[in-house]
Image 1 (cartoon, rainbow, N blue to C red):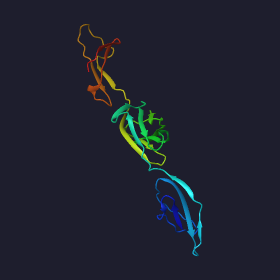
Image 2 (image 1 turned 180 degrees about the vertical axis):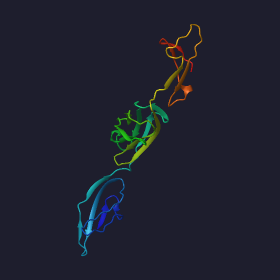
Image 3 (image 1 turned 90 degrees about the horizontal axis):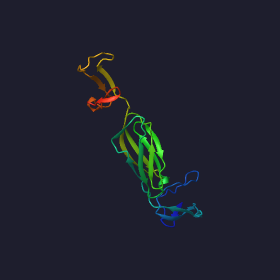
Image 4 (image 1 turned 135 degrees about the horizontal axis):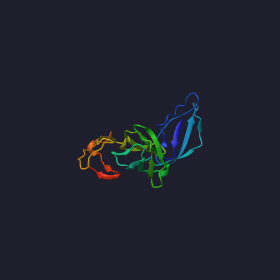
Length: 213
């Protein structure tokens, strides 16, 4: 058997040995352009059979898509239940942006969404169900041939736990003399912040009286 191309000539890299069923299967890279591919087969007596040529188009080499996460910035954070807006852009020299498959995934939560690019390659996704953890969020863009690019950021989701407050003094319901100095004492704590980072607001009958930290 012999494979030929009107552009590349004899395709000698292709296997030409038929199997027991007469099938001939092989592979070879072709140059860019329109090819007329022909197969000729010769038997032991010298007779030659030739198949009708098959015409195929070989395009230029495929380019990898490009992708970038624009927002949020890496190493930022949000509260549990918030809906961070993930924004980015994708591009491919070979196909329109709408033909790129775009997915978002987390190393903690797995695949959590996909985006359809605009004609300009702009993408966005709002997602409110990330778990309370530090996530490596990955943007993955894949072209029609399965070639892909990735970009990632570090994003922390903080459990939204309110601070706790315990007033030690003055005692609830206690009576004091007018003009007597009163000691105000409170114990505060928070799971995410140290005590000195908490903002305090003492109120007297609903009106702000002191914001001493």
